Length: 426
Ligand code: SF4
Ligand code: SF4
Image (cartoon, rainbow, N blue to C red; front, top):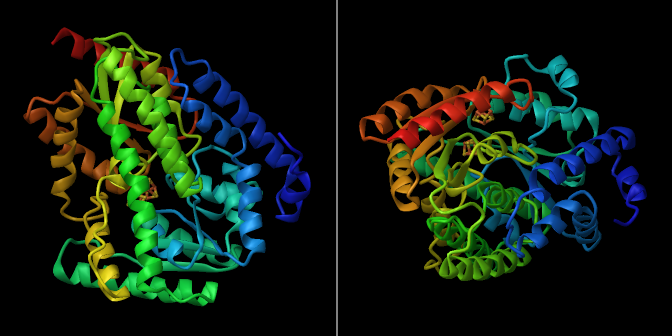
């Protein structure tokens, strides 16, 4: 790895804290990912991306900024990358998945805040996230109460925070509100970048993001094979890299990986033996480097074959139509696409459980692990009815609540092993 110290220092990072984070990240990656057996060759690209996640990729962002392009950071899959690309901007995800500097985060946030939010604040206050420091605009969104109120605290800490108001009901007025918010966001991007969005530039942005989503959907479909051609950990990693990498290069790399997986499926080659217990995960998103639960599952004689999550199917399953001729028509198409996202902040939210059922059937999963972060009211509240509905239709479900610490790892493993045993007895 080249020496990026000067670049990190110019970004205002705390070099000591940042070194500590990279060292933890590096050893966790080696233990969790590189130790896996029978990995596809195509994962080498993603290993490389991860080894350079704070290096070469940040250098690319800095080069883009030097050419006058804007880096737009966001925390939610409701923020359309298509609009960012339409002003030649670079979209980066800012959600964090590590328990780092929580003491500082807890000085400004209530202790009973979910780990996702605490981690974002820990990264900001500790000055260890080059993506956040490189962002020209940070986009927040009114989804859950935790995020909504925490943006008031984040506002003075970042140079340009833009908060999007999001609907909470799938009504006509909710859709109209989302479209209006996308119009306002488009105007904000035009102002920040000094570039006008045209029907052509927006259509190009939509095509790039559709291609990226199609590639990941292709990967999801290949995971229906038994033996599974790729581990759940590796597939999650691809879904995580989705938020950081150059979109065109990412799409090519995922499609190349899928070509290899297709061959594996034809030959019956897998990462685990045929017949290994197949699970899927549903619930809160897992941001890098939140790999605890998948790691525990896949070291307990089970394989994860799908994620109903924003870092997973909920982030990629819908495409955007490009039939419009004007910018307004295309924003309408974007609204149609994004308004289908069934995040638990919506009430009621029946399509989510329907899709979990559909995924379970398609992927031939034996059981569902419902994953909520502690203190995440929307997903915890929804987990009871979701479990009831799934169990009623004969779909065994394990409801888990956890955080980013390792303290409950032993307890989680015991519960997961007991669940797998229950499935295998059936
Ligand atoms: S879970 Fe909801 S709030 Fe979180 S990224 Fe997904 S859509 Fe956004
Ligand atoms: S995990 Fe839950 S509480 Fe945390 S930010 Fe996401 S929706 Fe909000």
